[in-house]
Length: 139
Image (cartoon, rainbow, N blue to C red; front, side):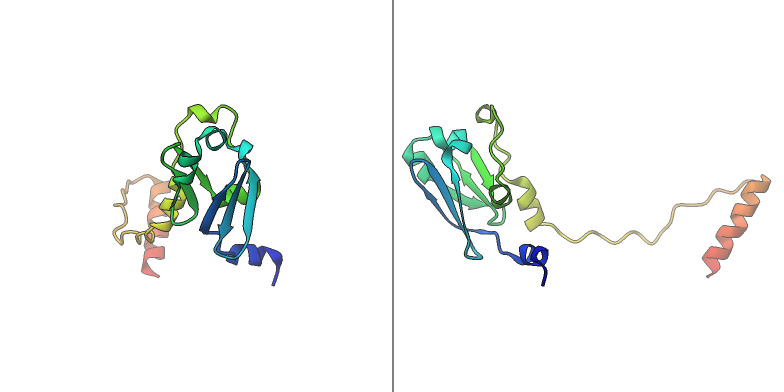
């Protein structure tokens, strides 16, 4: 089995979150633990210990949300080492909408069986097109 297949099959959902004064550690369902500097996330670094302790798993278990700090982190971003953008402490957090959308996605509906109507004219090019369409519909 290739290493890319192992990554695809890894369960990167959040199991637990541990915060210290200067680090954020996230335990994943597959047994790994991601530890990153808290300084990468200004809102968390500037938050009071009680605010940082109030976290929730969200986004189909792929995200962590701090409602008191309006901060959201996802496991994919933590695994790739994605830091909060400079100045992001003044922006609203996206609440991991993409993960929630993927977790709740329904299958794509089948296309309708009624094709759009075909318009015909008497121009020579259109008569040839008409014959081609008629031949393809007969098959």
